[in-house]
Length: 334
Image 1 (cartoon, rainbow, N blue to C red):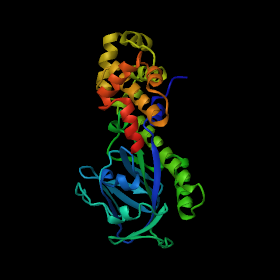
Image 2: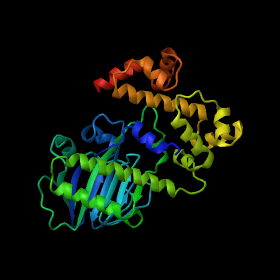
Image 3: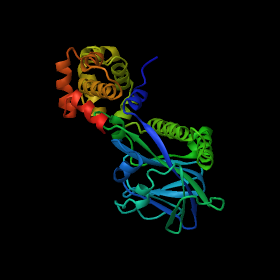
Image 4: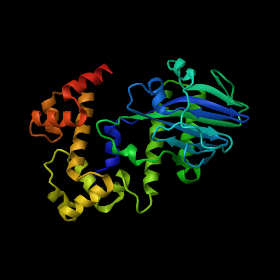
């Protein structure tokens, strides 16, 4: 069975989810969200990159990002914003929002409050706290997903600004996920937060897979490369044996192309040569081990394919900006 680079990457960049708000929506409701980078410190401290998502459990609405057409939402839909854009989710279709929203003070003032937190939104008013939801026209579970961008994460750039998972295309399991999210939000129990986090991560992975499956034939980028017969096979091999002393010639032989053809195809899809990709992937793997263990730098260097600690240290510093030991200390402080 060939290696699954998407799963590898999601593990390496520490994809993690969090559910923060259980929202009841009434009247002419509209929720505007500032760019995720502006509230990352409050909602997911320590994350390089934060993405907001909304699961619409009941009702209908629209999701709008500046410069893109509004996306219609119906009960059972999930919408995510992989690039962290400011956006509006509203009852009625509306003009594209301004590119900037000021993060509301309550996002920061309630950062330490138990989650999920009930919220009511109606006629432009947001009420935070224990608000009844029995008369809500619409219900949504909203939260965030976080991941590492550094040293190397080619997935985020390959995703669109809006990632829509319609209920009609998602299959019954997504409806069950949303129902479970509502249950956990309405009746918090021990372990509920962990359940909601895993549900959010599952939804993101499924949305990314469905986006991959529906890419047009002429699409480029990391996800499109996974789908390509030759580039996808090469990526699987590099992920399966990252420490192996690969050459472009050997990789090309394995996938059934000439050296120049593989190089050109790799650059076309990923905008980098195969050996450059391998070098980046090795550093990402090393960064995860540095962060998650106390192993010495020399053993990590060997595991990810470097012949010496000195060679690894030079490569790590060239890509990350600091030597591995200093980078590890900085991560532990953060």
